[in-house]
Image 1: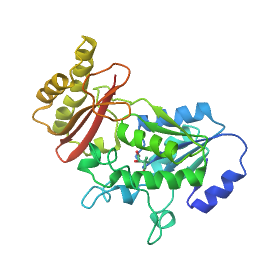
Image 2: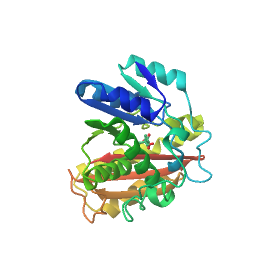
Image 3: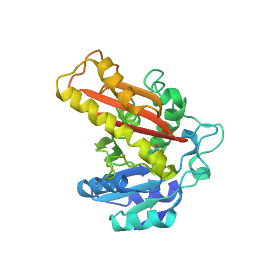
Image 4: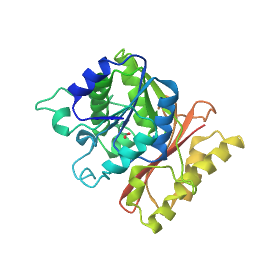
Length: 273
Ligand code: PAF
C-alpha cells in the first residue's frame, strides 16, 4: 500500500495505473462500516483508493472539527489489512487555497433535515467530494446509506453535473446492540450510549408498523417520537428515496430518518423500507 499526501502525486501515480479504480472517501477513525465500503471496492475494482481527510469546510463554527478522532496509525493498519492500494492523506493546505470556487448544496434538499441543523454542511461535503473525485477519477465511489441525505446529494451532484462516476450505496453496519457504527460513537458515555439505543429501536418499531400495513407517516412518526423520549430529537422524517416528504408510506420507496442528540453527540440513523 502506498501512502500519498498531495493531490498532484496521487494524480500522477493513478494516471499510470491500468484498470478500474474504486474509491472510498472517509474522514478516518475507520470502523467496520468503512471496512464494508473498502471490501465492496476491493471486490469490484482492480485498484482501491481510500482517502482520509477531516474536511474543515463541512464543519460549522463551534462543531467538533478539532476533537474529531484522528487515528493515523490504526487507520493505516485497517487499510493495509483490507487490501487498499493507495491511502490518500492530504492536508487542508493542499486541498484548499484562498478565495475558492465552491459548490452550493441544492437550496431545498440540501437545507432540510440535517441541512437545517447544520446549514452549509452539505455544501462543504459536495465541494470536497467533487475535489476528491477529480483527483482520483474513479469508476466507482462508495458511500454508506447511514448518511442517507449525503448519499442522495452526492448522487444528485454526479447526475446533474454529468460526472463519469458510479456512486455505490452500501448498507449500514451496526454494533451488536444495534447502534449504527459512526466515528462519533466514541464520544458517547455508557449512559449516553444506552439512551442512544432508542434510535435503532424506534426504527425497528417503524419497520414493524409498516410491515403490519400502517401507511400513515404521522402515525409512525408519533410512535417513534414517544419511543425516543427523553432523547433530544432533531427530527424524525419520512421521505421517499428522492427525499420528498410522503403522505403515504410506500414500501420500496421510503426512508425513515432520525437525527437525535445524546449528551452532546449528534447521531443519525435511518431505515430503507
Ligand atoms: O461521510 C464522510 O465521512 C464525509 O462526509 C466525506 C464523504 C468523506 C466527505 O468529507
